[in-house]
Length: 434
Ligand code: UGA
Image (tube, rainbow, N blue to C red):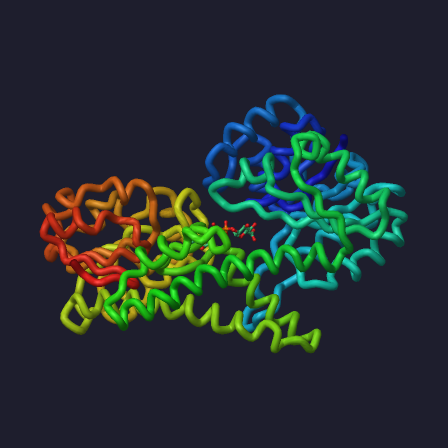
């Protein structure tokens, strides 16, 4: 089938390449000419495992092209996927829909009668109903088909999703989208067909649940710290209950990124508009618990340094909001790094992939070329993004260069026994020192 994908960020670029790999002819559209040129040359402008190979193959096959011209998309495709971002508005909780509105304004005048627009962006409930009027005026259809991919697993999640949700007002429109996804449906992927509002809500409900699960275990970590209990044993024990499960129960520095934090805030803002703010007031607490973990990590570092970070040298391991990504949007690691700096510390940051993004957005921090380099003369080491490289790092490599053997494990993934055996004072969120 002939498809266009509008917006070629983490979601759109992955979706475009994945759809081409299913055999469709795909045109990726973005207003950023530099990004389009890069993608057209087969290069991915961000770090996402498996995507560079997939993209290069699909561009080489001729099934995948990129353009800045929305009119070309209108002429090329029968199905248009809208994959632009919906960031948090500055100074507000609500989502900023300017990119969705701009994408629709550019596309709608060029839509062919009978074509289908598929919304994949995460939007406040009610947005699709508003856009439907514009699309129907062009004699086209609109469905909402939220995306659940995780950065770091984007290709896998796009090609083998755990469910396909389609919100539609007509059976014909839903059927067209199912044709696009035919191979996934044949492979047994569950399909949930519903209305537009439910499809929009499924996405924010899922992210709110995940955020709540993380903040729940982090709240338990706070209680563990106050009682001398151990959060990792507690999480393991409750996770064996199949109704609870182990996933998303890892206590530590909490969630960041371009999705969970802004989605729960936009959801609260939308609930307020709808007069059901009380229903979601618990999300405010979810957000607060999450922010407190960042402050607590800085407190731990300060306590270990004798009560003040002024003049201390702090080594920060990690800048990305999670491993296997170079995304630094609302990164807990960089938030902690900046707080330490504001308290008078000299901070050196190392991350395997997110250095360029971090340098550009946070030029006042100092950066190092390796974990060992970042740790030279450090008074305390903060492990804030759980890259495999850091789990595999032997403490002896850092012992040789640091001023003091002190480490805060903000992600509860380092081998506490090993670090302690090597003479390090080890502190972690929700756990006692050995
Ligand atoms: C999240 C959702 O998991 C996806 O399903 C969704 O499609 C996506 O948002 C989106 O809305 O686009 P993502 O932001 O890529 O995906 O990252 P996650 O793997 O969900 O991790 C989010 C944050 O939670 C990270 O900072 C991670 O370190 C943290 N986390 C995760 C924990 O602190 N503890 C855990 O146990 C799990």
